[in-house]
Amino acid sequence: MARIDEDELIEHWTLIGGELAEVAGKRGPTRLAFALLLKFYTRRGRFPRGRGELPDEAVAYVARQVKVPASDLGLYEWSGRTFEYHRAQIRTFLGFRECTVADAGKLTAWLAEHACHRERHPERVREELLGHCRDELIEPPSANRIGRIISSALHQADTALTLRISARIPPAAAARMLALIAEASDDPGGDGDGREAFALIKSDPGDVSLKTCEEEAAKLALLRHIGLPAGLFADVAPKVLAAWRARAAMEAPSHLREHQDPVKLTLLAALLYCRQREITDTLVDLLITTVHRINARAETRVVNEFVTELKRVAGKENILFKMTEAALGGPDRLVSEVIYPAVPGGAETLAALLQEYRTQGTGYRQHKQRVFKASYTNHYRKGLIQLLDALESGSTNTARTHDGGPGADQAVQQPGHRQHPVLRPRRARPRRWRRPGRPAGADVPRRQARPDADPAQRL
Image 1: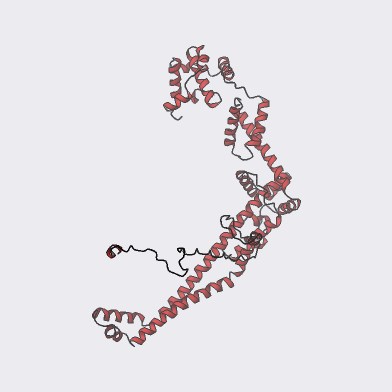
Image 2: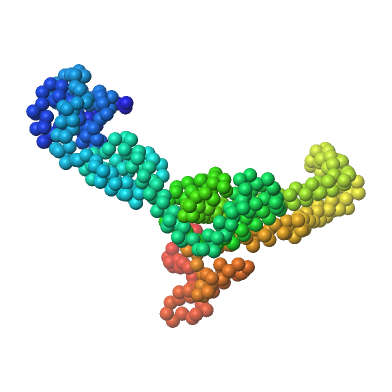
């Protein structure tokens, strides 16, 4: 148990006002135990389960207030008629009441409506329950009863949500989803094109290749063909949706078929809705990775070809060595007297080397562009076209707008529409200021010096 500092003791364990009057009629260990029960209930909204829940610092602090030795607390009995009588006194003083059967039903309904629709973790739902009991001045029930209330609330919330979601699914989409698992086996043995549609949708993407692009585009087309509404899970918490998606992915098709229709349709819809978003992200990653791979491979191929070409030309290293040796031997002499005689062929050889370098520089860029274009138009053409057709481009940037007219936004969202840049007219520059009566074409000096000013000061 964590230690309690002095500030916390003063704030939560000091007897004030009517609390002193309630304690005044008690004596000995009963006085100390009653004061501790009262302050614990005031802070936690429940009674301690025994001496172990009372911090030693709090016991010593309260003992000094009621003028009873802290060791006398060991003589108090934590069960029996006296203990129950003290509990009833404290409830009456603080205005709390015990949790009845009707209160348990109301708490279950409140949890199902306000807590369980967004949170499925039992511990966090328990915190919501204890807080609501405190607000309603209801003493929390026992731990076992709290567990039953939480389980019932989670079940009610799940049933209400599944009924609401399944009612939103169009009949045609529901029929297509049921057809996916109608003939699906628990252990599909095929691979590639032989895999079942449901197993294909749940499968992970492979390595970056044209086959992977085709498979992912086919998955996305299949999911779009089912026709789930875009806002199907708009009011469902992300945690709940993730739990449904994980449950549907883990269960075998035979188990999914055994559920009632609302649960079955909701689980399938959650899985397909999440998979559609995941596959869309995968296609974007494939597009980016494929473009980078094309550029990297083309760059490597062109560099290797030109390096090989340079290595086939003999004599360049020998010429460079002779030029360096001659330059170091006569650093003060003219180039025509030192460098030209050292190079076989003289100035004509140097001019040819310069022309070769310039030609290779232009050829390198041109050849690289040809390799890039060949990669895009031959091997990767089919996969890139499928990726671009499967994805819909758009922009959510509202800060950058253009004056394209009322149909400009619709034109951007149309597939296959090429958006051209909008040219704005250049702002007219303001005319230069001139004094009244001065000709328009006359030059106006930026600064005029005083006649009596010293030229040296102007400088």
